[in-house]
Length: 108
Image (cartoon, rainbow, N blue to C red):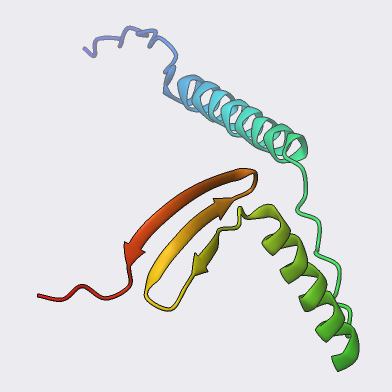
């Protein structure tokens, strides 16, 4: 006599459910990172292209250079040295005058 086989109920396999859940969560994380990156790029200002250089004639360049040199020289302090035949007589810086009697050559 044959024994009748008992029907054994096998619980459902949850592997496929976990796989789907993992894929959905991973896709959500990737999308969130993309949105965050796009927001960061939108927050940074775009670099502005510099204006093209203006071509100037040689005479204009010469005038600009002289004007700039004049400004630089006017900003510097000046020193006037009064010299006689054999000695330095005075040093003048602005309103300050220092009388000196320093020989130009020293004999040894």
